[in-house]
Length: 511
Image (tube, rainbow, N blue to C red; front, side, top):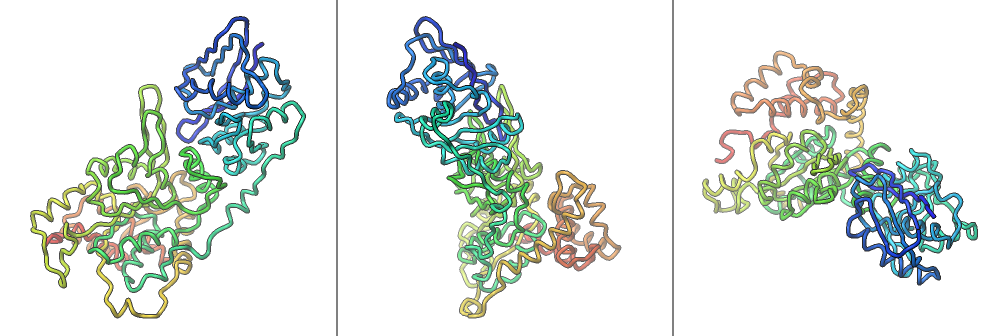
């Protein structure tokens, strides 16, 4: 008897429906075809034990299973439940009239209980698109899949629940989630708040500008100046995610298996990888490509603490994703693309000892050591960072001051107002939502300068020996400063402030 059941494979952040054809005939043997990986090939042992422990049996006949399309590589243990139900129906142990109306996915334990899977959200989206009635999956993944309206999503604890439902012996209630209610559950009192930061007013201003325009920023200062403390508080002043951004971000975390019984993500991600990270872990990849840290930070913040400590080749692979806001991973037979539109926040000491240019500390690094330390970061990478700012230690008077600083909620109101101006400006453009995403054509259109501003910028370009990319970055930052002031055009004061935020371009910065 031939039976067809349906599962799904995830490539990148998109899913493809897989038809699992199970044929049971005279003879003996178990044949699994359609490019399964080792985890799927091993499923026969898990299935046999799970069936026996639930009062069923593996048929002692010739079982042939084809996973179509046969030329598409299938991976992971999430097909265990699909294969199990197919074998039970094909062998006549259970009757299931409507089996072709459901997507069935889940990893089996030997006692028939289910383990969580990856990519439940993209699978649910694809199932809805293709007109399936429902989706059976492990209970741990049910919240992320239930985000998709118009699809019956059933959270299953063990294989017997699916069997009873398909045979009409038991009932299962589909899980429903009010996506909008879930999305609007925002935190008005963030864990890390700018009101905790004493002093550092100029750095907070920089952070506000970076958040308002989505600009990349690097903080340079000695140990203990507060670089990490400031970076951790940046997500608290970013504008709330839109529903589209929340879905995109949740999709990536679903594919990576990082959601842990969470529905829709409504907080912007903050990723802070250690400096020993490899290329593949940062940008994504592997023999079966998985999203890396830059994609996990999509629509959020990627914080690279102690930037020169990262391997140079690791930093260089970030150059293209920083520019294109997506990363494409190519393999011999397929290519996957992961979105990676993130804000880069980097921090570094100004020298190996950490106390270069600090009048209160002895300078222990020679100019040669300094040069070697800073050369770990290439010019092209620094060019892609819009704002460079020096962070100086906070004096005792400020540290001991009992006065509360401005809270993240207040700063976020100004940032959100500036972002709304940008959203209106770019509403006709598909892939541009804020100033940092502007290309040269948009810069010419929206950052037109008067003669005074042009002369000021020309002088700065010549004195600081800036590249063409740095010129564009200054204009983008100036446009954001103008948006924070609700100014329709960029004037010389905005340009002057933007030029200050290019510390590492200054001649003589090394002394």
